Image 1 (spheres, one colour):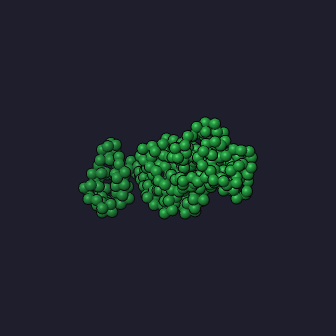
Image 2 (cartoon, rainbow, N blue to C red; image 1 turned 30 degrees about the vertical axis):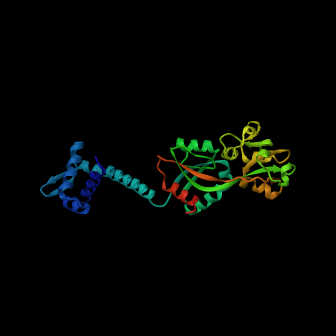
Image 3 (cartoon, helix red, strand yellow; image 1 turned 180 degrees about the horizontal axis):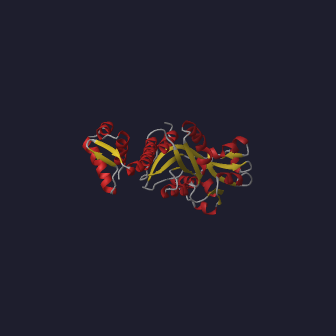
Length: 293
């Protein structure tokens, strides 16, 4: 039994006329007759009585109409859903974002996106960069937004934004006077840094390596699981930390912390999707929003 056969059966049953049904369906009379005959043979049932040029529903044909109508109606509903996929973006988008992105950069962009596309449901999880990428690879998330590297060949990546790291210290730290710092100063300091897998930690590590500096001081650093924990740890005492300028900005504006005089290069924020998985129109629309298009 095919959907086409059911549509033909219902049209013939409605009109009680093969030629009329064929004309309405833009089919030949022979094609309509063949479809009805095939349906009857396949299920060993007589749906119509044929007497000369007349055709009339049998009792089995009458009983079959509601079931055929239900199947065709459900198929039409499914077609409508699929057609909707090619229209206005809708449905669920599962996002996983690294901490800096999720806390400071992404929320206003998601708010704008939801205003433009209210039929899209956003479900966001916050993880560090490494775990966010793992979620995308495993299919637990449709889209990742991270500030670290994403070099797996199974991933498609786009640059969607950027920020800059900063060395942050408390008001009593010697670096609070904004004296110029060099690599040797950083290597000799006491640090609180993010955990392994964090994009911030990875960017700090790579910045040191790019300057041919030893990163052994990472081994002695106090490790914290979030930007806010790192910032809280340096409020008093002689510890220093490195976080995004966006994470530190409220504390700098409030006068509770200082930015030391050491400049990092800008780092990129990346969107991450699985290269071999379908991206819905909702995901594509969100990527366009993040890219400012």
